[in-house]
Length: 101
Image (cartoon, rainbow, N blue to C red; front, side, top):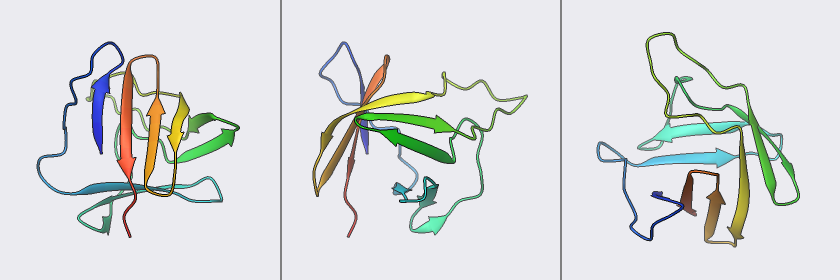
């Protein structure tokens, strides 16, 4: 994945210690993996989602008392959806995910 602020064209990469992927399952579950291994629930991450057209509403976020989340997003808009690319836009950032096959 790659991420950028909504007001810039410069992409930023946050994942430097492994390959991360997120699976959006038909039942609304989110599965987070690092290097192909399912990860335990983590602070600031949603574990469920609900789609309504181009809007995605996230839920089941874990807020940890000693972690300052950078504003976990409760909602995103699908701006690109194809067999190879998912782009989600929030009020703060744009994130692109490529398909893993």
